[in-house]
Length: 185
Image (cartoon, rainbow, N blue to C red; front, side, top):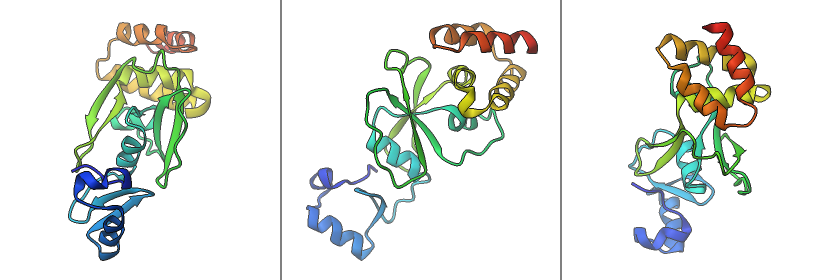
């Protein structure tokens, strides 16, 4: 099940006016401005659907990705989503924080996952990339979050070599990451 938008309504068998009438009748649910889902579908995370619909290249990052990988106990207030620098941050109805990452490093450690309850996929960074990002952006996520994620990752048997390889490719990640690894190993 893909979300219906006014621009794609014809593919789903709706005209623009019938799209709005279906919403008024309760056949469609408006999850965000210009994004509708069939009422009988129960998508579990509207934030993910809106992010993937607004920016197909978006990737879950920072605290949201660390939480997804169960590396921190923190429950983020908003969904942290990375888009390539130079892209416009879309206006959203959901609790999404848009982060702009350098296009040359955007795909490092990036994979995609399906969004439960829909046919959409969204990008997500690997645990190693998330930890490296947490250290390089520690002023934003907090040093404790980065340190705690690294401790948990090491406890689970994470390989420091893979983490260092990713840290070397990202600006401002190498030094704090190496210092933390030195203290923890």
